[in-house]
Picture 1 (cartoon, rainbow, N blue to C red):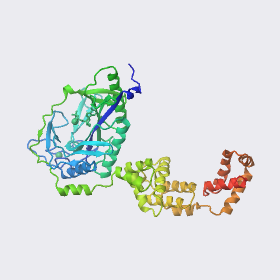
Picture 2 (cartoon, rainbow, N blue to C red):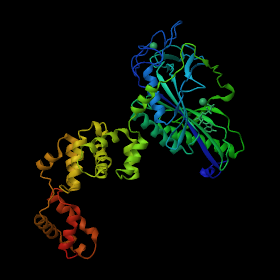
Picture 3 (tube, rainbow, N blue to C red):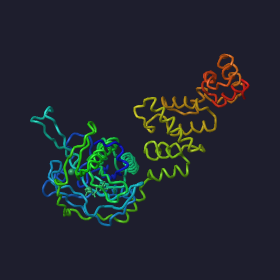
Picture 4 (cartoon, rainbow, N blue to C red):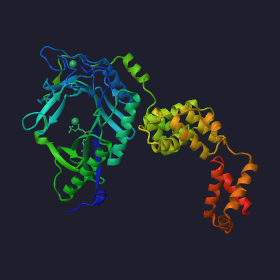
Length: 488
Ligand code: ADP
Ligand code: MG
Ligand code: ZN
């Protein structure tokens, strides 16, 4: 039986996400080892993170501060007293044979980000990293696993949403909002490729209009935004086909292979772990003081959701532009810097130059890094340029040329305009003379325009723009040509 997209008329997707965020603290969650990424394996270990008998964990205060900032940014209620548990499991990535995590009393609950409710936010430690070496590798035998304990014990914040998402694309967009929010706070690199942001997706279908949730499957460790969306889509198709065939969806954990598009079971509910949670006897409960809470609250920067609101309400930016500048942390920081440098230029004009011309010309110049902050165009220079255009001191065409020079070598737009003689041609006598020459030089085009074929005006305008090196205002040139041809 084939299930075309038609199933969307019968079933409604329900999606909830579980997200792990590696905190960028200086040291690990329960010991003094430094965090490292991409370093030689097993450099950063000690008796605590290697689980030597008799060693004792100590909670990292910076990790608690960071976790509080995240929880507050997600509008959560902070537990006055949360508890660390031991989550027991036997696997080579964890020498203690348990992970210290939070269980029935997490750090924070009942939050919200955008349209999605947050179920809980808690603190835990990361496992070590397993590196699988194939038989063709340099390790003997038919393939082996190596363990790198550098990652073991890295502070993690786990964020669990309520099942409030109903569409794969929306899930992806929401995860992007979460990523930008955490990036803005500055407590994690939140990089999916490097694993500092990891996401599991819980997916189910239910008949349209039903209240009860269907049986869910869990997609583990989606490592890019694109794969998250594709994986959920693939899983929805699979479940729809099962339901259409009147078969049951099994509660299980799946792995999505982005290359083949296939979903393979990791473990089913029957083999679910029994983690035998019990309170960690070596740690005191986590009880943030009032001072810690207010410090965390005060140190939060403006977050994407409220920044977007401000751009819409106060700066009157268009919806799409406000979203782009609020949700892209790098571009947003650049825009804010340009705004601060501008005197009197309309924010919308600056926004247009940042999201339009600047982004486009950085891409065109194939700058290694299309991030405007690391380009040669300073926010000051861009604000100045936008101001000159708005005050009609230079034409849009001339401004594009100034921008190209800025992208290539940096500098001050006012000087570049002087040096290259790009100031607006406001001497209309001079412009009229050039228009007259344009009409003489191409009598055929002139005749066609006179006959009402406005498309033929292109070569005439082009002539004037070449002669003026783009300094003339396009609208003015068109007006003068029409006037010249008696159409004014
Ligand atoms: P489990 O006990 O299997 O871990 P939880 O109730 O803790 O399940 O939920 C884990 C995640 O799955 C949460 O993000 C939650 O929103 C989501 N979730 C729960 N039930 C469903 C469902 N029926 N369909 C989709 N997502 C669900
Ligand atoms: Mg769970
Ligand atoms: Zn250590």
